[in-house]
Length: 169
Image (cartoon, rainbow, N blue to C red; front, side):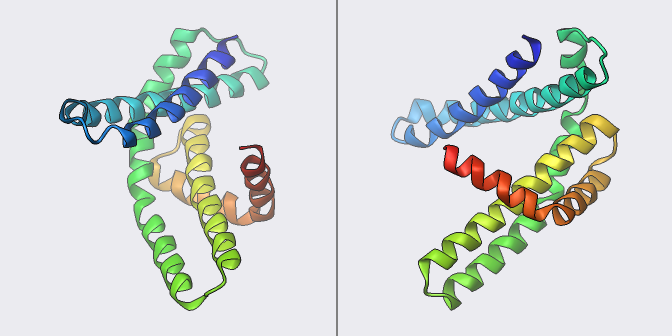
């Protein structure tokens, strides 16, 4: 039940955040948007890290309480924010390559495939980095390198999982 609760919080935060893009006409809601976005990102990081930590403890056959997992996950948020900041150059590099492809390639199917591959690559680096921070207690720079190496070494598997996720959506 505990793992399901953390998974639900993580999914709920991911669903609620895109809804704010439709609220730009109301000035009152614009003032609420920035603090709400920061809270959503914070709780998303805590829930994802807590979910990974709870699953890790469960695989080790160790029981943990909700408060222990929540405190542990909250202690990892600063490192996850650091991971996010360290991934910004990689995101810009991928966007730059995508823009070059967009001007060079006129085929929209090939361009869509390139967008799928780049989003799978960046998303996987970030998720594997969060796993490294949460499970192995590494710093943000090491987590970024770990995320890149795991993604590159398992890129075919990453594409298959992202493709299945895309088809499910």
